[in-house]
Figure 1 (tube, rainbow, N blue to C red):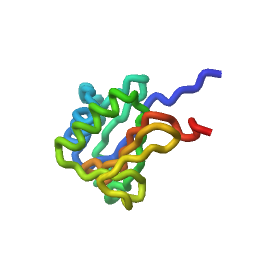
Figure 2 (figure 1 turned 180 degrees about the vertical axis):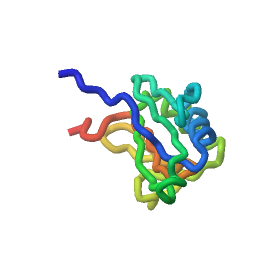
Figure 3 (figure 1 turned 60 degrees about the vertical axis):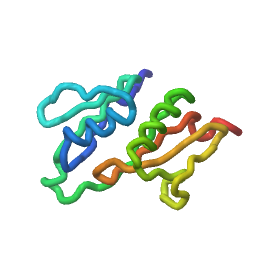
Figure 4 (figure 1 turned 135 degrees about the horizontal axis):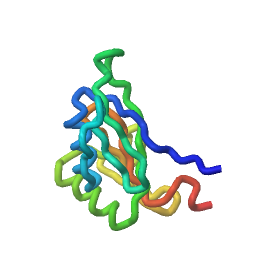
Length: 130
């Protein structure tokens, strides 16, 4: 069986600005508008489709999006986070401010997007170090 995640919808107050924020931090491009969606395609083929649907159903409900990156990509992305002066944490609960983690023998960091979505980059998948 070949099942792959193809896309997910990310609610936002401003889909274009939110998509651009993610693309800029991760070093990616924003795709052309597709209907009501502003897409950011991740290199593994999964697309995050930003959608201004929050007004239809109330406030944006924060979600968590984690990205597995190489060590070099971590350095580049983390550099962009720091150069923008964005707050970051070593944990998803935002208790360890200004730190990174070394979970599972890799590195990881969390930061928020303009809608309150909790973003994360990790260099090793969870459970990688037994």
